[in-house]
Image (cartoon, rainbow, N blue to C red; front, side, top):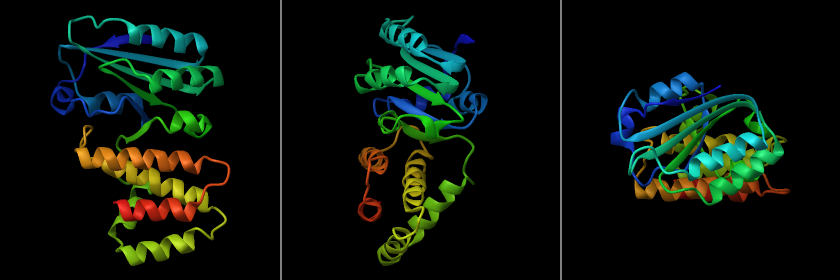
Length: 222
């Protein structure tokens, strides 16, 4: 199912050039629509729901993203909700996100985010909708409350755990959520921290990531 929607009025206030070009949304479609806002003019707002998002759908999205907005100067927002994404579609989206069209932003929702390609995930900012009490969010909050010595002690212990990579991933994604939680368009300092966290998350999907080094860098950065 595909439909065009009106862009949210709140986004008119929150929206600026610092908004990330692509998001991985932890939450359902309707809460996201509610989060973004209600009705307004001056923006193109597209929403698609799919069982499987394939190469044909990705080509359609690319073609739509390359079109001129319905109104001169309008921003384009795409919400893509799918149970699964084919490898070919993910690679196509990756190319699209690496060279995004101006004033075009994407929100991807899926219940199987762990099956997304690491390279694609590294291009997506995590946006938590209605997830203030999520385990990752709480883990990040607890991490932030520690002083530097406490963080380093925690990291040294966590790096020796059998699931060290998963612990690190939850903390990195939780810190990303923390940065994005108060405003969809963060400050310049937060944007820099956010981009670095995205790189760290990408490193964690590598063959042999250094969990200790990655978490230590994050601990000193935030």
